[in-house]
Length: 105
Image 1 (cartoon, one colour):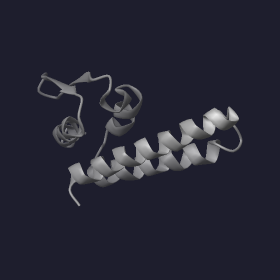
Image 2 (cartoon, one colour; image 1 turned 180 degrees about the vertical axis):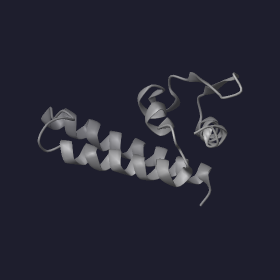
Image 3 (cartoon, helix red, strand yellow; image 1 turned 135 degrees about the vertical axis):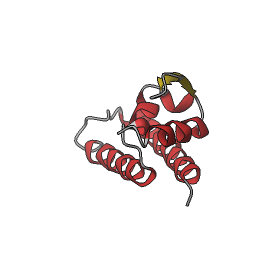
């Protein structure tokens, strides 16, 4: 499986996860840090870390894309080792960022 395909699957799983969580939250008011949801969010975090490792993400760019870029809804720029900025909006942009920072570490 290619990096792009892995990242696309990761993003689809995120969308499925958040859709189910949002519905559950509306029904119950459960927050991510409640006793029931904590292990579920921990599984998501472990999945993200596993995908990061598989694609060679040495700088936690997946977490950055999820939390800081809202999965592409709020694009941000990242500074590459050649002092050029890369705007990261799409999964393809994220794949480029990961690829260009693999050698930097």
